[in-house]
Image (tube, rainbow, N blue to C red; front, side, top):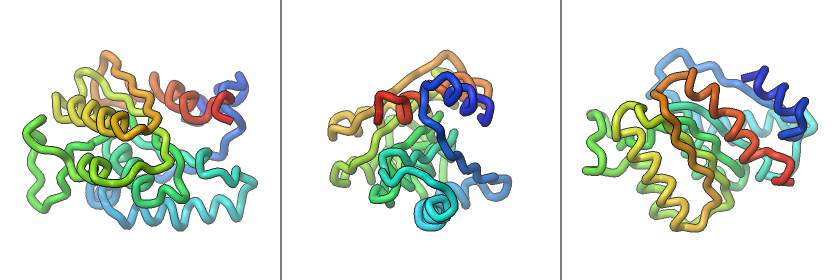
Length: 191
């Protein structure tokens, strides 16, 4: 990711960008699917970055990003803190989670994930989205719910860029689409 960012900045496809990475090797579901993570990113990390770096005052330039559960965490953080976060870059977002104690593998379209319901029932917020997912990505649970989130956001009037690629649930696929998401959300035409 640092090389992709450096190349995009060098080629002037995105403006100079400060990027903060959060390593998560512990309880991925417990950490990434929680309000504590959303609050930490928006209330502590963004505040810390503003105090330590000369970053844009505009929330439109604050992007939260992640693959899989990280995509869920990014979209959840933006929903909870749209006053601080203006964009979501989600790759293969795990939007099928219902956030119940006994989580079962998704059976799409028999139910909606909790975050899909939250976006469906919330007022439209000032958030832009880049969503991508591989056509062979964990079956219809991932592909279907990413399409469903796209449709919910589109119907509510959000700006959404959506991309499907021939691939699965892997860093290899995400590496090839990351630049598209960054350009979509941070490209010079966004200024």
